[in-house]
Length: 187
Picture 1: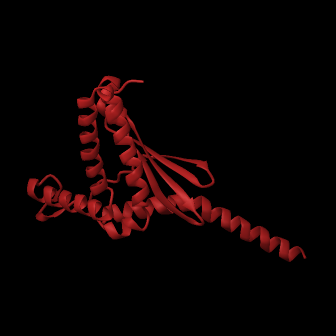
Picture 2 (picture 1 turned 135 degrees about the vertical axis):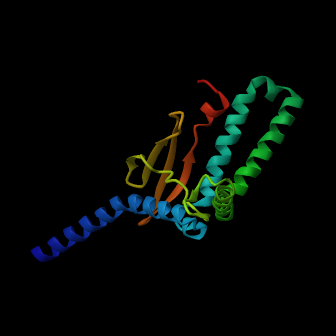
Picture 3 (picture 1 turned 90 degrees about the vertical axis):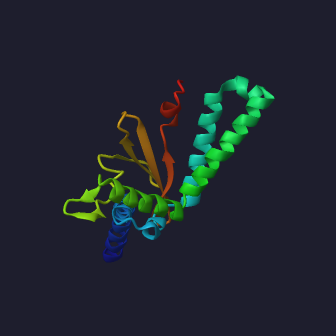
């Protein structure tokens, strides 16, 4: 009987260890996919529909708050706000996909080759991989199924990457951008 109890305890501890290590394994897989500029590998660890929805809601909210109440009450202002929101949403929808991320990564490689800024010394066609977006991140479990990695922009504004657990699998589901700071909204 004691052997069964010990076995159950060991299995539960292993499961808890796997769940606790899961977000870190996912972050490392995302880092590797970005470093190798592999959009397909990135897709395995990012829930693009959820990220797209999150980013779109943030952009629409920031645009509406930046426009102010007067623009929303004015028919012409509301129309302009709707157009701006649609355009911004379209950009978010196009970029927050595996193909969009792949295009950004490939475009970055092409830009670096053309400009020479990211090229490897002695080989003008090779370029340095993109920088690690999660370097110097602060990690935190918000619950047993929610984990955040927070990095600061060059201006010191926080960007929060949110990972959620579904079963034993962790995926990036949300990126919280400091849009208030970017568009000049004050609370």
